[in-house]
Length: 174
Image (tube, rainbow, N blue to C red; front, side, top):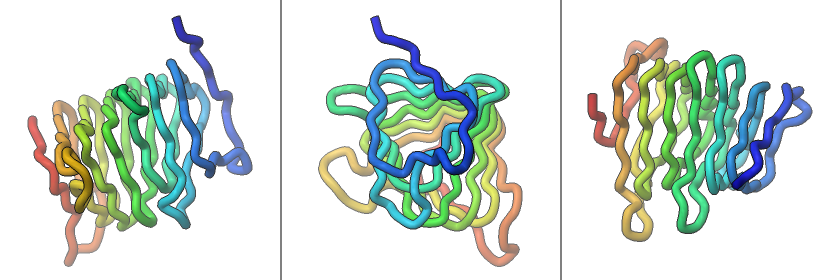
């Protein structure tokens, strides 16, 4: 039995920029902001699940979201929930299952590397604003280039340069 933790609504001054680990089930019914847009170093380790219910939001500004040792971490965006991925610099998704039934907005022109059996399951709306990239990790130990995007919802480029593109370099299943 694990406790269910909840984060209340946050102010921008409450931004989490350090390396943190979430164990068990964590719910963010307010606005949880995590990461550092100036650095790729902060790591959010999810050893269990992070849930964003309807009305809640998760803002990811930089760093890596990864699974805990010997576990598969899950990030779940429920119907009515939102996740903002503001790709100013490098970001990574390692071994996480990201399930979206709400809305995910990827903004700016950064790169998200994904691998180590990471999976995006989209049944909601996944919007690419501007010209970002979703690639496998460029190198690493076995499994660095194993990731999947399962799309059962809406995957759409919303905005960007007319002479450039957004790129998804992992398998997309629909």
